[in-house]
Amino acid sequence: MDSIKNIDRNSFEEVDLLNKQAEEARKENNNLSLSVSKEAISIAQLLGYTKGLAKAYLNAGISCRLSSNFEASIEYFQEALSLYKRLNDKKGESRTLNALANVYYNLSNFTKAIEYYDECVFVLQSIGDLKFEAIVLTNAGLCYQESGDLKAALNNYLESLSISKSNGTDAHYALYNNLGIVYLETGRYHEALMYFTEALKKTQAEKNVIDESFTLANIGRTYIYMSDFVNAITYLSEAMLIMKKYGNRQAESQVFSNLGKSYLKMRCYPEAIKYYNRALKYYKEIGDKSSVDHTLCELGELYFELNDYKTSRQFYMDGLEISQNINDVMNILRINTGLARLYLKFRDTEKAASYLSNAEKLAKAANSYKDLIKISKIFSENCSISDNYKEAKVFMEKHNKYLAKLSNLSEENKIQAIMLGHIKNSFINNTPAYYNIPKQEEVLSQA
Image (cartoon, rainbow, N blue to C red; front, side, top):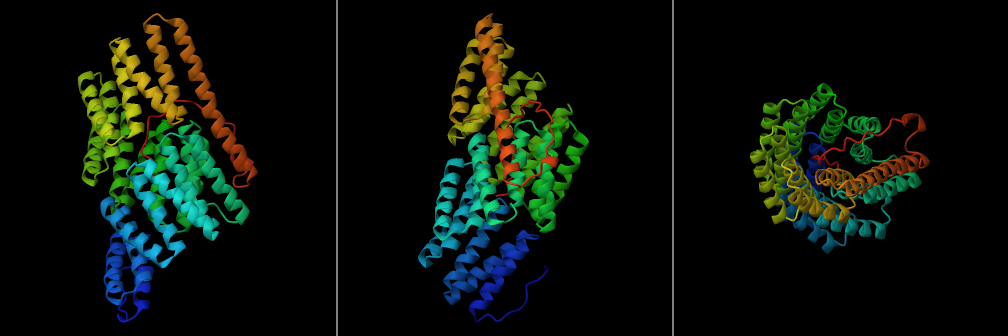
């Protein structure tokens, strides 16, 4: 839509129409959506139209979140939540709680996000809104997934699938995207592509261009780990074109980070550094501190590959300072792991063991098998350097145990998804999981 119709400005219907136009515009033109929402807020305030005002605040908050203006987004959502509670409008309240959770997910405050998701589910259950409950469970699953707890994530996804099945409705495309990410993280790349492709079909059918871009980016990420860098860069670049057009700065930054990863894997280090630095600049501009420290960790790993250990350590320490200040547990974990590898390079086994112990404690608390696999292997190497082969063998046994647990998670999910009838056996092959365990990635949320 290119323009807003002239309408009678003396009725509640005017606000309702503006709110509807804002929702429609958001699919293709987020800036227009925000502009219309602000107009609706002004008119609703003049008319004293509480219900219309609450909806306008909610729309404005969503637009701000999509453009990575998280502070303004939270302010709009809190205004909307207060009004919906005053109206005893449970549907509006649930949508706002979910929206608030999504902002805290974007800010990597997973504890706060899950609190809002849980509160939202409680409200939805009180009104029997199963369809939206399935979507919220999917969002919460992605939040658990990002915090490293794949088991809790899968439980949420399967519960969402179960609700959709009992309701006789199709699963939301976000669920297919998130299941794809689980398979990606467990090394089952062909199955990940199957889920992402299904999500892409659904976003294109619904003409939701912004969410289509997220799916394209996730397909690009998958090709990175399949070492198909031409396809990876093609899909990531296509996603970038859409994101630039609609002004989603955080998602755009995530694509820059993944392009950096692609060029790093190709050993094109100048290009990798260029994209990581661009991602870092944007993350700082939008105040996404968690992604700043994650990118610093990625740069630490890049300079480790370049054998520039002094620069590598500096990036790790800068990232560690930020992650500790904001209590970003997953990045603290991974930076400790990176520092352990760095000190192991100089055979400082005592220092390496100290960092590994810190990382292992955090990974166990988060139930992050992916990280425990990597930590156990480095622990084994550390013991071997110290000629402690008996202990090295113990850690390799742990490594294999965590590999098996991670494999079982994806296998159990596959079986249950087939039983629920949301995927066909013919789509699932027996492609073996090759556990080239990826480092933490920027997941493009469909939440």
